[in-house]
Image (cartoon, rainbow, N blue to C red):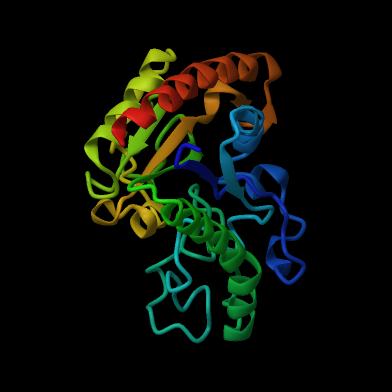
Length: 266
């Protein structure tokens, strides 16, 4: 089996019962920063190719899996020693990327720990298991794609306010989270599939690629962001089936190339 798997940390839409501040929000606000439908775009393809995928059902505003539990501040967790404003979109989101307020007051340390156990630990436990499984089988290198989506335009809270983005943005934490050969293969695959591809702009990678992308230990993690305008209405958050079918065909082309070439990387 090819030592390759995918993660989808931000497609979950389920709000924990304890997160009362997220209950009753308008759908467009609640779904503002969710990677909505990314699982729908990739999962059938990954299943058909026997590629393992780790995802979550939980909403990223309650516990963001591309952060670490320490990414909190006094506005999100009452006991935090980090000043308010340091992690407004950290492990618990205080505001959206359009500055819409989410949390009116910080949660208790007890609730923070409960959400860590409920949301963070199960997902990351599965990721660690996959790395360990491949490594125990003797694989010298293990490859991971961390799959996300992004707004078509950068907001004031992004590095590229007002900029129109590429179809796909590939990130490797500034060339730190993966061997170059894997990054080049992923870029080539998405380009060959007909996508316009950017590299390390405006996204450099997140905590998932930081944690698991350790090339010196044979672990290679690349983040892939897909432009939401390709398959959904960004205003209403509605899925556009006809557009999505085209994207799915392109993704098949990309993954056909990745899976055919990965064994040659060793």
